[in-house]
Amino acid sequence: MRENEKATLLTRRQIMLASGVAMAGAIPFLPIARTAAAPEVRTAKLRLTADTRTLAVNGKSARVFGLLGPNGKPGITLSPGERFHVDLVNQAATSTIIHWHGQLPPWTQDGFPWPQTPPIPADDTRSYDYAPIAGTYWMHSHQGMQEQSLMTAPLIVHSAEDMRADRQEVVLMLHDFSFQTPDELLAGLTKSNGSQSAMPKSGMGNNMNMGSGSMAAMGMGSGMAMDLNDIDYDAFLANDRTFADPEVVRTEPGGRVRLRLINAASSTQFWVDLGALSGTVVAVDGHPVRPVRSTRLPLAIAQRLDVLIDLPGKGAYPIFAQVEGKRARTGIVLAASGAPVSRTAAEASENSPPVDLSFERRLEAVTPLTPRAPDLTHRVILAGAMAPYAWSLNGEYWPNVTPLMIATGQRVAIEMLNHTMMPHPMHLHGHAFQVVAINGTPLAGAVRDTVLVPPMGSVTVAFDADNPGRWAFHCHNLYHMMTGMMTEVRYPAII
Ligand SMILES: [Cu+2]
Picture 1 (tube, protein in one colour):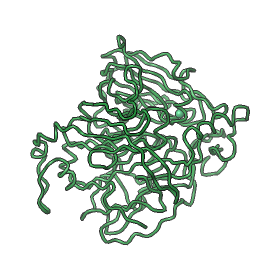
Picture 2 (cartoon, protein in one colour; picture 1 turned 60 degrees about the vertical axis):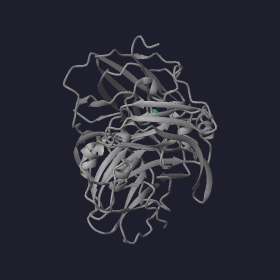
Picture 3 (tube, protein in one colour; picture 1 turned 90 degrees about the vertical axis):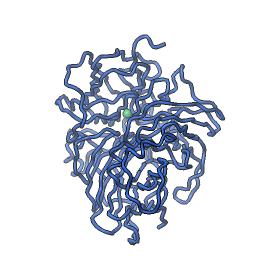
Picture 4 (cartoon, protein in one colour; picture 1 turned 90 degrees about the horizontal axis):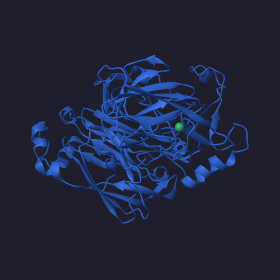
């Protein structure tokens, strides 16, 4: 097992260095006022490069994209108070546009290919400058299917509280990976089953009928078949590595970790299993929630979780991310310095259940919406099927859609009704919403930017319309989005 102690391990000392704070040996952590006072940090323009790279997966090499930040590492990490002031340099040899997932910039900086904000041509540069919100975010291409080819990276915005907490930061970004091109994967879905029954062809997706007792016991007991995992991937990656050769993150003395989990997969949902550890979830999609202790955490596509973990001893602890409905898993290892790391089985002993909303129901925003009845409720029907493979919102297929109109100052609710046998992780750009009902039952849930709508279920979210523009609203399963499952949330008088 190879060790890589540096890949995504951001110690407090590195945070200090990144913040321009001088450091001499093991000096105590400086108060935040000193850090925030560094003026060069606040005004520095950062360079982010969209590029191509070669990645070794299962002993074979693959050509993929990458997004490298100013320090040559994936993505961008910002200090408290620092602006997102970035030159995005496109060296990917093809046009691209990068979306700052979950951030709330002006709409022209959202990184979506609207006519007003076209993709960045190869060898061109585009500048961004907005005040970011703190938390665990990520960035990904919104051009074609580049996201499947790993045009993704973490976007971490530290808060003053993060700095005071003085926890070791560990980022774990998940991917699904295929040696086939995204076009081939999509063609396999759309061409193979147009005239067949609802069962996908062998090898493409696993139609997970609920035959096993454990599945039937998961509460889906309608006897209907549930579709999971449209695509049969070659590998699942955690920080670009498979579980056969995982990243080993050496923990600092004391073993106090803030684990930032990002599901950057294009079409895969995971159960994160902390193994022998237990954790406290303190934020979802970057937004603080009242602490919830758990060891098994569902992570839908595009969602994030911040988990505080205190290592109980000086051992080595694998963090698993198991694909829903499968035995396949990936992950990393947290290990005290010097602790031996033994090999862990690359597959779990049992299939995991489907990702569901049992955890979502336990979440409660630290900063909820102010109580107020919605001025406007948009009802959106999620429709589609595996055969023919096409997915829609309100019967419309992107780009031929009728925008959902909202206006500044309104409290807006969106009620999503899933009329399909697939789960759909629904994401709204430019706004953070609160989950306010599940299957018609009200709750004061989490504030977040992506929520799972399970098969035949419904979820209602609410938000305050405070960011005028044109905003994409879509399923974050890339293949659902590509076959139509996207619409626009739009304010009036936007040209
Ligand atoms: Cu979907």
